[in-house]
Length: 286
Ligand SMILES: Nc1ncnc2c1ncn2[C@@H]1O[C@H](COP(=O)(O)OP(=O)(O)OP(=O)(O)O)[C@@H](O)[C@H]1O
Ligand SMILES: Cc1ncsc1CCO
Ligand SMILES: [Mg+2]
Image 1 (cartoon, rainbow, N blue to C red):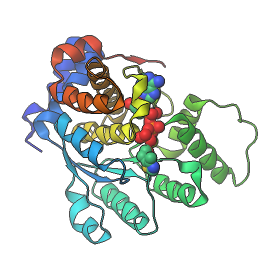
Image 2 (cartoon, rainbow, N blue to C red):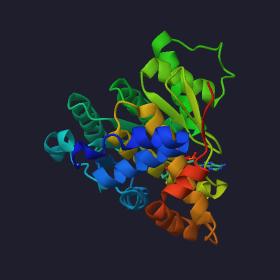
Image 3 (cartoon, rainbow, N blue to C red):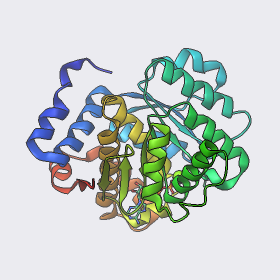
Image 4 (cartoon, rainbow, N blue to C red):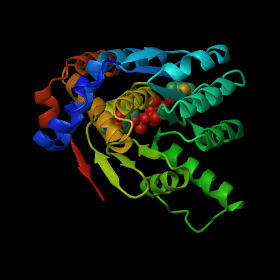
């Protein structure tokens, strides 16, 4: 990344214009510092994730060989681990990279794709959570399933007293137990550290008709946390808002999911202060 000359950009923008200014400050810092984001991610998501990171101003590296982790991971600005196409061969790379990032003091984010699909996936995910991700981002079903599994593991039995927890309560509980920031995506994204809750409302429903948009916003979260590791809660909220805003602007030119994918990348690349300041929808819930 470039030097610390831009270090006050977020603070200046924030005081000038609240959450919109804060989101713009994060995006400006990603653009000026081009954080190197290592992505160990599923095959489906690689192209969209790498191109969206580039459009946002970050520098993607899809490096996953176990033989490269020791040399490479300590030098990245952030790591994104995604279990979407998990295999026996890749799990050791994910574990080694997560441990290396933690040792080097680098933020890393976890996307627990379809965590409840198999015992293999759940066990892998619980092991990764134990390595201390800075942020966990999933859809509601994933966060609810992961929260329930963490709770049962901690209590060494089935806890039947909180079956009606909704995704936000699950997110808060998971954040409390793991020490990670937890983001649950949807029409409104909720971001929590277990106590504070922030809502980010940008986005369009058609994002769900493009595969790997969730994976991609998780990688964008990594880029935003990379430029302000001391505040992953706000970095995560701003990344989700900026991604959703790019989708809103792209949607104005799109004819369906395929063209939305293209226009969303263009819009992320072209986002300006005016759009972010006037349209970012971020608020503190509690
Ligand atoms: N109904 C909706 N309205 C607006 N935005 C939405 C809606 N649902 C999801 N999003 C946005 O779409 C993006 C992807 O979220 P989603 O919850 O679909 O992730 P996901 O299920 O993990 O996706 P994938 O596994 O395909 O990567 C997020 O930026 C989220 O804010
Ligand atoms: C479709 C699909 N299958 C495994 S990962 C993935 C991308 C969305 O998470
Ligand atoms: Mg997903």
